[in-house]
Image (cartoon, rainbow, N blue to C red):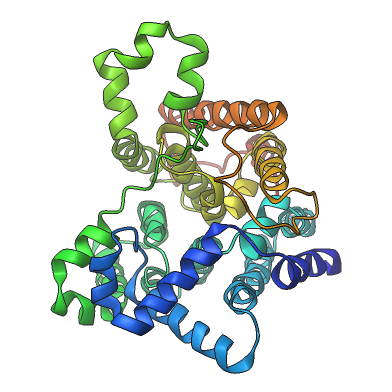
Length: 400
């Protein structure tokens, strides 16, 4: 475990991080100078919740007063929070014989290290918040689970994608409504001042943010089945004039994924153990990665610890392919494998062949994973009668 801590501290203290560190510094500076609402109007890409944006401003003020670089102070809390994620994995899997192996596999996972300590964004907090809510609900602490989930929305909106699966841990419609009400009130408490001042800009910048279709100045796409995979197999004419259903899915992939998440959760509604719910949460986020064009890079952090509740092949292949893609790309953009150089996305319009191959394989894997989740849910046997004997736990073949 010491190795994981050393690697995270190395990234926090000695590396510069990605462009996101500079973007967050800009958020902090402009929010301090002109105020939150004015900054939302000034920069339509200022898409983070009011609470986290104001916190970044406070971090910058402390950095200026203390002389500690903003890049260190901003990333350090998320590196520490990642340690909390490991503890939560151990708590949820306390009856599992391989819980220490799972915790070590996450703690030393290159993606977890990069996203919590190097990249410089808030995405690793999503997994921590959702996992903490799962643990609290599994301990029948409904109020705590609701408060945590609501507070998570102060930091990052995609926490809400786990909500359908989390509700399986809350028994009865009345308790579900109480859970939703408390989580909603908690979440909205920090949005309310900005909402009262200018509800429209808050809805446009924060609640309606669609993600970005990211590509280099040379036109190399960073993610997406439509941009990455389709040109490899489709006729040339399809690239500019695809069939209607293909164009619809490319444009509305995130909405289709959300619809499938709801259907998948409904299909598995009687599978309510914490491990089953964590597997559903993993599937929910993988549907987003697989079907959407807009979410890549650090967004894998949303679901990373939940991969270990799936069959063993999933976290292994996801780490090899997505981890290989992200690490090789970061090495390329920083200019060295120690990630000590300055991140230069603009200065690399074309990527090395190894990065392209790993990108293609990672996109294909998550697209196939999304399809697998849907097919597995459709073919899953009807829920067992509660009075029937429990199924053989060995048949699940999950990682823990």
